[in-house]
Image 1 (spheres, helix red, strand yellow):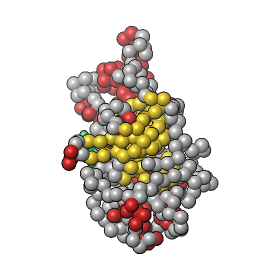
Image 2: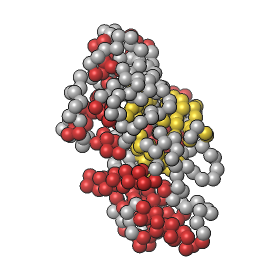
Image 3: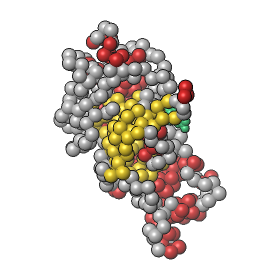
Image 4: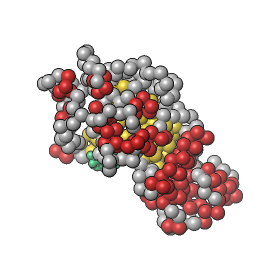
Amino acid sequence: MSELTFEDVTVRFGSGRRAMTAVDRVHLTVPSGAVVGLVGESGSGKSTLARAAVGLTPVAGGRILLDGRPLPRRGRRPLQLVFQDPYSSLDPRMTIGSSIAEAIPRGAVAGAAGRRDEVARLLELVDLSADRAACHPAELSGGQRQRVALARALAGRPDVVIADEITSALDVSIQGTVLNLVRDLHRSLGLSMLFITHDLAVVRYVSDYIAVMYLGRIVEYGPAASVLADPQHPYTRELLAAARRPGGATAAAAFPDVPPPQVADAEPADPHHPPAGCRFHPRCPVGPLVHADRAVCRDAAPTGEGRRHRAACHFASSATGQPDASGSGRTSHPAGRPGAATPGGPPTDRLS
Ligand SMILES: Nc1ncnc2c1ncn2[C@@H]1O[C@H](COP(=O)(O)OP(=O)(O)OP(=O)(O)O)[C@@H](O)[C@H]1O
């Protein structure tokens, strides 16, 4: 079990007028043995953060640490990324067995027989029979291919798995079986996981903690039960409310306790020109209710300090109808709340 920490991580793309900051000074912890669900709308920077963690995208600033130490540049890869589309990690010309065998680190098993046995063990771990090793990807269903992608990721015995929308491309009926598998693997192997999804029903099902991302920043973080039952950031409330609307995400029935949304003055977010101050302020229904001129929201970026459940909003507690007169940006529950999901909160105490 290992703890993954993003410390002040920034990722930029392009240069000159096309320059943009996809991930902006992110602080995020995946506690040892926990599943952190990372949610946010398309373009908020979730995949970029994942790719930066495994070294596919260079970081412009900050540090990514495993158990407090920088990630090794060579040798065993303690972080593995599983993508939405298993075709991207499986060669259609190779058998499933060869694809998995290729991912077993050199020296981890002895000889061809050892490799074969390890492939069979990995296939069984993801609920596929060992004889599937002889199949090609095209002979498997989408759900089975995603299981193979998971087996391939597990071949290197990683400490942390990052799953990027791994159920989004699957039929709803198959999604459940893959999610059950993820939960079982997490429990039996003690894996730490960063589970990226836009579907709040999915995130509720698998996560111990939830992190909400908006325009490159984490705007809320906390125990899953606490974030879902008592969202502190207006953006999180908007996401939950959208999930409850007909035609929204599949989670409608899952959030009976979330009050209906206040109507936001929606302006599409432009990642090339993010607003100053709080990035959500042009869309936010809460700031004007508390401070008519929204000056603090326009001028100052909220940091989201606090221990267990925290939100980067100057009026975090106003989101639940209890104005925070200090406007400090702290959550109203710095010490967490009774019944929170997992004991022992993450060590970082601010969001950005
Ligand atoms: N290689 C790249 N070059 C330039 N811009 C990029 C690149 N990759 C991502 N971006 C931009 O970075 C921002 C964040 O994208 P990212 O894919 O991380 O978001 P996301 O939250 O994962 O969204 P989605 O759920 O749609 O994948 C977007 O504005 C995207 O256009």
